[in-house]
Image 1 (spheres, rainbow, N blue to C red):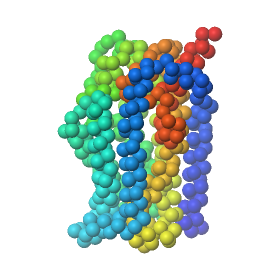
Image 2: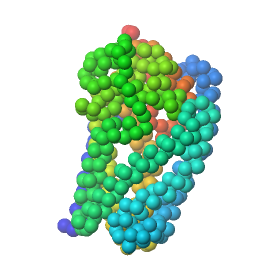
Image 3: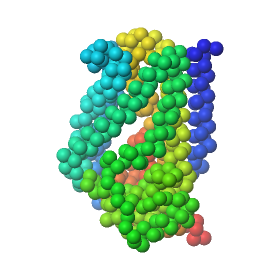
Length: 419
């Protein structure tokens, strides 16, 4: 069988494995709370809070959609015309057109140009966040964070691009197989090193001092069978008023991380409810499941891109002879961008199901639906959430159940356990 035939067979196998993984490991059996219960929860929320949340989200919405559209158009303009390939060639010219310069510097330049076009919308978003009091960092702090994200992305991108095109040079007929394995390995590696190496770049973490709350959180984790190394406090207040907590890391690196804003704004019972939700993710190995699905998806994407390289019209539009040339990277980026936009609703649906399971876990662990409801109200109020967002927007991109869904589910749990 030819490499092309093996690639097609491998793609079918990877897609089948991804479908089976999602079907078996995602909690599809948890339907949302009845709509009547959601509307009842909405009616009980303070009117001014609901109005302000909807006003804030409406202020963000136009720029968000326009940025998404422009980002797509730029990716298509660079990938489906010779413009992108010429840019890669131009960047590599001072280095004699060496393939490594085209691959790494040219590829990073293409990504940077695409980001640069949407940068005004990111700045505009920061303006809206500041106007509504959610952002607390100055323009200087915002710029520093932006530069940090560019540096982190450049390091990861350079490793990925350099490794990818090195594999192509070493195995020109079978690069798709090694590239798929490398992409899957990179996804798994990042899931381990991100909490340890990347998170400290953007936040400072300090151990929570001895206190009844720390004792309660550590005991909660122990009772849940989720060993954690420590409870850390992140200095989120230097850039936002938003409140949050999460369980970060795997195995020996796992720790509970609490925003300092959450400690400042919420009661100990509400903090416990948030942490119990996050422990649910660790208990059900959601990070592992996400890493596995991400690895399978990345591997399948590499093989699919290889097969698309046999579609001659795409190559002609991009002005390249082969998909494995560094000059073809803008075409790869355009295809990945389109695939990402198309798959967003499925990813959002999977995320909502996982988050709903974590909510149920928190309720069962704390047995305090009152604190859970109070926490949801506080999260929605401080984070300026729309408690019942527009349906199409919710279905396309919402990663969590809506506030009214979560409150209604908590009240359903309370009715069930009080019988």
